[in-house]
Image (cartoon, helix red, strand yellow):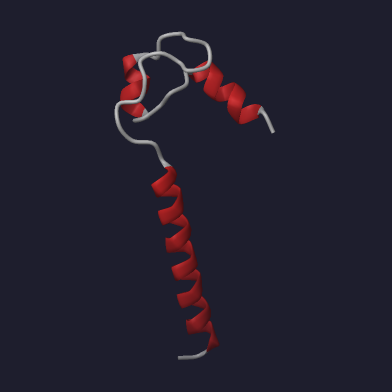
Amino acid sequence: MDQFDRAQEFEARYRDGAIACVLAAVPTGPGTTHCIECGEPIPEARRQAVPGCTLCVTCQAQMEETP
């Protein structure tokens, strides 16, 4: 095994660990029927597409824009 093989092995372990961390942080479950920020109903289609969501599309977009 040369240094390139070791580097590829290290990169694969690092990548797999990073993916596992992101997946562990993804919400699951039913979520909420109303946005926790503005109180507006969250459409059923969004709740099915994004399991565990707690924000409506508008509030989610605002949260993602805020640094």
